[in-house]
Every structure is written in structure tokens, then in C-alpha cells.
Length: 176
Image (cartoon, rainbow, N blue to C red; front, side, top):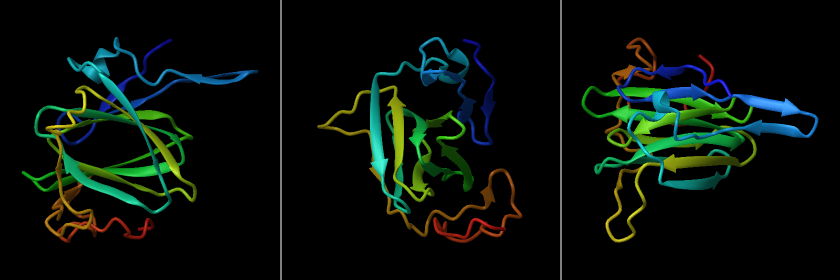
């Protein structure tokens, strides 16, 4: 299978990768993670896969990993808006992942991140991580989903977005 190009997004290490869907008379086959995809993985090695089923309009945010965990998100059913926030320069990235355009989003754990289901049905999000979950000492720091300290000065590389310089609103209308 031919591997397509990985796009580097505006925060270092955040990458988006389009997956190849191969339809035939039986259905569709898609590889969603391979250890030889070095332009996506770099030096990471996937050690665990998880499935999150989340109901419509639910927000799962904010958290980050301080011990080196990297997350790889892919949506199997439904649609989600993933947000990644860098505290240092108050830059926020948004990426919409959905079943219609299969992609993998790489999120380095040093960034605050989370997602909101934006489809009218539950979203099935599979995510791969490069570190096993440690039940005794989890690599996870949390903040409330509506934390007013998440106040982006830049969104998707732009400073003229009307949502800049105000606390992040997961429910801001999608029309502009």
C-alpha cells in the first residue's frame, strides 16, 4: 500500500495523516497504524490501543501527558473536533476527524488536548499510545473542560479569529 504525505500542523510535532481506504465488492479495508510509517511515528513505538465511545455533544478535555506519551487519534464512526493547546504561546489547533475521511492525528502529550463529539450519533475514536498506561502512576494531568485559563491568542495559526483572546468555548457556533 502506498503511504501518503504527513502534514505538519502549526504546533511542533502535531501531524495529520490521511489514510488510504481500499473498497472492493466485500466492503472497505483500511490500515490505520503500521510500525513502518516513520514519517508519522518518528521514533515512537505504539504499545497500546484504546477505544473511546462518546455520546453527541460530550466534551472530553483537557488533559496532557508529562512523561512522554504521544497519542494517535483516528475516528471510526461519527465526527469529533480535536483541540490541541500550547500553554507557552497560547496557540490552539483544531482538527475535525470523521468516518468519511479517515485520518490519524498525532498529538505530543506535552500539549493540552481533548475533543468534542460534533456528529448527531456517538463517535467511536480509536487511539494508539507509545506508552503503556500505568495504573499506579498515570501519565496524565487534568484541567476542567471549561477552564477559563485556556485562552488562545492564536487559533490554527491565525490571530484574527473572533474566538481569540477569550476563554475557549467548545460550543461556539460552527458558522463564521
